[in-house]
Image (cartoon, rainbow, N blue to C red; front, side):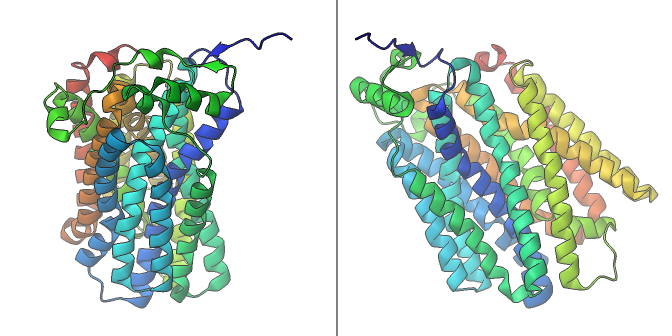
Length: 453
């Protein structure tokens, strides 16, 4: 009987095991974006029709609670995963999201919702840290960056799916009092995530970093098949002590933290700040009929959100086409710069009272290049510049800083609208995008790992 020929995991073709890992590890991205979209739908329902006393400060607090959770979760769970392994936390994250979403459903009070959004955010933050790690470790070399980027692009699919389902449910219900039922969309997806992870394996990279070579080989065979041998990952240095944040930042990693975290924070303004408050911004720009019933306005805004998220997906697809062809530093710099151009077009169109098509074009340019550039690259870059033994901490810290930026954006946008209207929101957004381009260019030149591709 002929012995089956062994293949190297770094150079093998894609097979079903890779697809399975990609799908299971990407669901957290879809869930996170879906929750952000859902918040943008629920908050106007609560404020306009149920709790009109909610001021801009309260709206900002509630809207940013899940992002605050992501800040805590991505850093905390990333650090815990480096110390204790990925697998248990990979299962705990969806359970935390499931429990919090169900609690918010059964106890439908606005401040209970805020607390549960924080808990859900912790679980999603862990997903952001762990999902990309699994994908970047196990994919073949030629597919690694593409698959990490494709995982991020599933966030657009999550937004589209949640917005579309919500749109049809709202049309059917015609009752804003059912806002808490929309949370069951999050419950269903988190339950699916947990069930798919019951039969899963520990991260081979983490096992190697902790001198568990045989277990790493078993994990690779579990994921990819008995004919697969472990690749270059086995040559990674063994981690001899538990990492901590102080040591991590003292290992010449500060410039990597700035490079991977600050642009992520700048990108968060566009993805979450403008994304969550899109219905309100559309009203401020005058793109919806002013005589509509308040609930009809919400339904109309959900429709517009779905349409714009299609451009988000197109932007991701564009980024995936060029991810292996153009230096990631250049992609991120140009993405920030061109998305700023879209915002400038929105500002000029508003100031001069130009046609609605100018606003559509501005949104199109903004979403297309934000997602082809920084929204995609800020997810790809952190796993690329950190070593395996520090990757959980590095990726988690980058995601945490990124979400701090998103928290600031989500909290302040209602207040910026109050202080200076849509003009002030657009001016601040333009400046933040240009800051992201500058930080990327300045610090990126100092990091050898990002200049190799």
